[in-house]
Length: 261
Picture 1 (cartoon, rainbow, N blue to C red):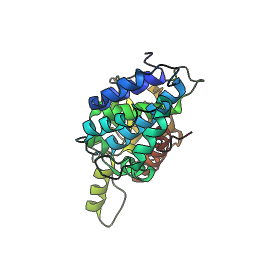
Picture 2: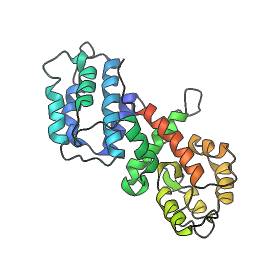
Picture 3: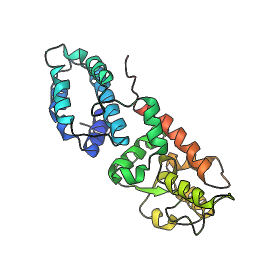
Picture 4: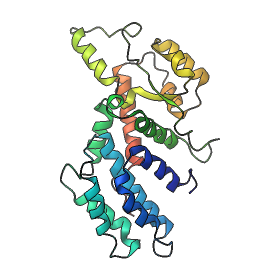
């Protein structure tokens, strides 16, 4: 399978999420001839399935029931027309109400993306995969490269983890509370981006003016170009929240819950 085809990209993300318990389901899917399951319907199935996996991954929802659940899904497919598989999968996922099987809604997915400390909750490959997908979403056929290099870039905090030296808090009546809030939000999606391994040490804990200049000089990623496009005089809680909201909206488009049609 071409690694840059929709199927190849799905398999890369599937391996990164480490959900081998779904292997029997995928073997059945890819084992169907095109005459029984046309490529367009196979891709709809994969898009639905990936949405389910990614949304649960971001919410750090349990995987303990996956083995049984994926066999249950397979049981819903094997005795029916393979062409019905995308619709049968979507219907079954939408019916689930138990936490161990729930397909997170758009509202829950957005809340998890914008508020959870994903840098601490997700493994680095999974977080990088999430950011890679967002980077790809900004690209298109007119881009020199439609897809970002996989597995090579590093995750960078825009507001650094050690922010106290160069990133003063805004004036407030309760600086302790403000520091707690900053420590919470700095690990959220809105404050994370991708950079090369050589640029990462150069940025480190530098002030915003230094990071802004370095990114503008060296980056070719759309994630960073979009970040710099606003010409923000500062990078703080408001900017992180606004960017997180924008990225969450893109993530909902990449991994939709309504994949009918």
